[in-house]
Amino acid sequence: MTQAAPSVITLKRATLAYGARTLWQDLNLDVRAGEFLAVLGANGSGKTSFLKILLGMSTLSSGQIMLDGVPVKRGSRAIGYVPQQKHFAPDTAMRARDLVGLGVDGDKWGFRLHGRAYRQRVDELLEMVGASSYGKIPVGMLSGGEQQRLRIAQALASNPKVLLCDEPLLSLDMHHQKAVSALVAQQAQANGTAVVFVTHEINPILEHVDRVLYLAGGRFTLGTPEEVMRTEVLSALYGTHVQVLNVEGRLVVVGRPDTVIDGHLSEELLGETVHQHGAHELGNS
Ligand SMILES: Nc1ncnc2c1ncn2[C@@H]1O[C@H](COP(=O)(O)OP(=O)(O)OP(=O)(O)O)[C@@H](O)[C@H]1O
Image (cartoon, rainbow, N blue to C red; front, side, top):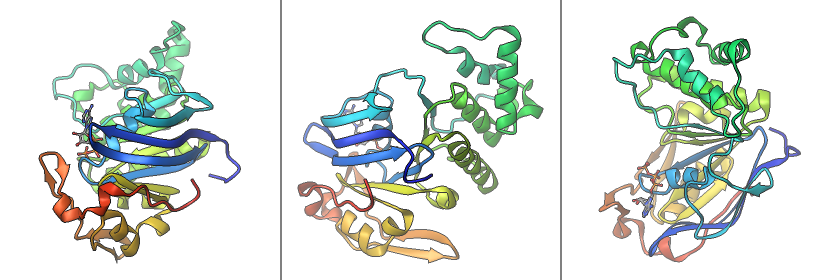
């Protein structure tokens, strides 16, 4: 990703609140073509809500969001979406290539690829994600990692400008986590796709990440992994002392007050400051 790349996602003073509860406020962010943005944070910090805003499924409480220079619209073909990893039931009969084909088919303007062109596009997508050898196998018989490659192929079918991934590594083993992350990063670089990657665990994607948006307790921090994944920065964000350890190249955050009480972060653990102040922001948003 180069600094000169055009901005694909633009948020200006974006705030999302549900009732009295603010998930994040005054978020200014430009995600550029080819950029890989990781969205990290505790349970309930607003990661999925952030994706829903980008998908046009929810609206901001205040502020602006633009996708490729125009307001976000639901169902945009400019967005590819990889949902949370869920295994297909073992008896799911749909073939792998037909699952990918759903992405090729689904043009909202009614344009359809037929016959040979359709088959060629599906073949191309299967090859892109290294799934050619199991295209004709029912998805229910495939491993979690194989299924996830297909979901990525499906999301890439429309050559999207933005790829949104919601915890795509859950329940994958480390080998498959690495493979799926590399695939997404390669797509960002090869096609200039802006990637927004929601995850609990930064380590499998650390080598690919350009910037981190870290959400906690109604606030956020934005910057490169080196800027954000630091003891003093995350302690300021959480409003209590946490420690970022580097254990043989893996980053471990110790002492996070991630306790969730009735769906809300414990204010006792977080301290009062969390809900009162605006964002503490780093980096070049
Ligand atoms: N439509 C809604 N109305 C009211 N509250 C909501 C709504 N959607 C989400 N919330 C609340 O906002 C908070 C953030 O939810 P969200 O799903 O974005 O968190 P998350 O960071 O993705 O969490 P997890 O890591 O557990 O998936 C939660 O407390 C949730 O209950």
